[in-house]
Length: 86
Image (cartoon, rainbow, N blue to C red; front, side, top):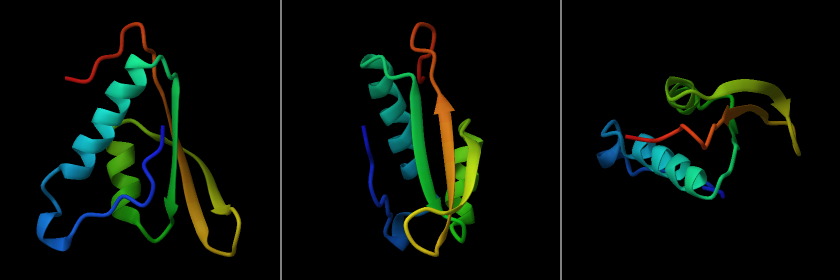
């Protein structure tokens, strides 16, 4: 499962849409018995990093991946037997 280049128009930011989308992704991952979600973003996107940490993602890597841009990688383990998004 992948969401690539998630972006909200400035008029629709701070409404929880990205959070809702990520939580829906987790619900779908649960349905398909996926047990880990990985995401990364550029280090300069602090609001994205904070959003991910707020909903339970843990930082596992910081540094360049395929170019010189510093990216932050985060993961969220899921326990699909008792995990449910409400």
